[in-house]
Length: 136
Image (cartoon, rainbow, N blue to C red; front, side, top):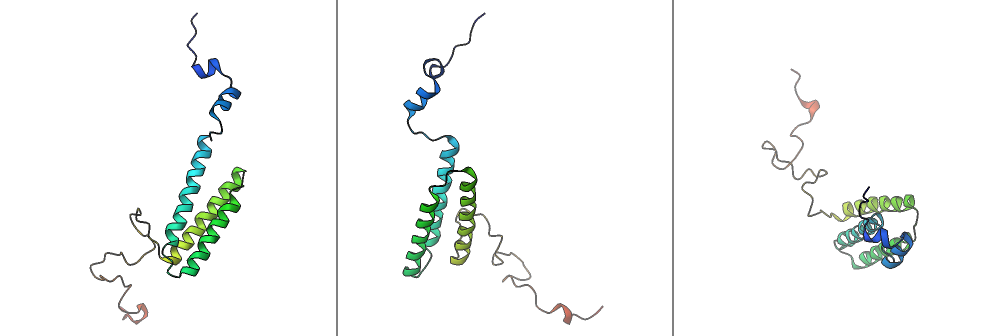
């Protein structure tokens, strides 16, 4: 009976030694969470660039930084997900307030401006009131 060769790491080192050698390397889940948070943080500041008033812009920047600092200490997975969802909701509100359009977005489902209608090129709803139509 032959044994399959073991990998070097499992044969030479136990888990404790592997973790000690690697140092404080995050798991894949922790790494992905960190990247998501960084992406959301940067998106906030992209949207904040569109605020014309410097005082209001500075106030909003401080608010974003403070909120991210407060949520940095969240350790449970549930609280982290809740903070991310709340951040996403706040980001959408900010984007709608400042008129931010994501350059990577293919379409804007919310907008009536991009409607392509040969009968009504400006995107208006209609030309007469429905109750003013003659009865047939």
